[in-house]
Image 1 (spheres, rainbow, N blue to C red):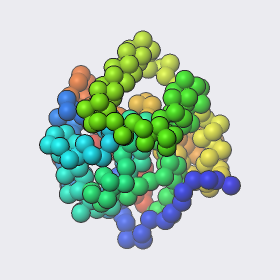
Image 2: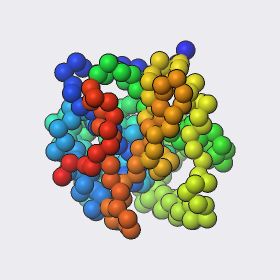
Image 3: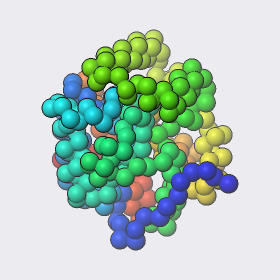
Length: 255
């Protein structure tokens, strides 16, 4: 039996947009503008944000100061007044809390969540928890997802939290620079199949790995990997996975 959350979309919904891994921050203005434009102008009834929307989130109180976080919250609030928006934490923005969700009108998505719509059930996860070969990361994840650790971190002054986040980003970038993308840990195929069977879902949709593809898991089940977004550094990438009665289709974001 699956331990994931499960719910059915309202019958009036005709389109659900799914995206992740935008890694938004101060130095991604083009990516931020494309994200804002899509949220505000997509014809979708709902948008599922599957984690790492922000490169780092150091606490909801960051929105109280003029700057990137406040602008992001304003966009999310405006978009949530037009359509249903769900937010699932990733490995970069796991400190998004109830304060931001309440202020913007976003709906928290448990990781993983199974959603039934258009006669299908899909399973959604950010993906990091199922990269079972990345044992170093999983140990780190266990540490920072601990309630006591989070409370201690959030009790620090905001400036100190920002400095810690910068250091963690630099360390992550340095580690990634020594590894070819094809060597990055991927979602474990056996775990993905087990979760799909347990949740009675046809397809798994996740982000995290930045390796967009469709993987055959057998028995008519597939694993759909979302693209990351980057319109500010080098080759541009921006893609939305659109879910309708016709199935899943990759599209460019709305302008």
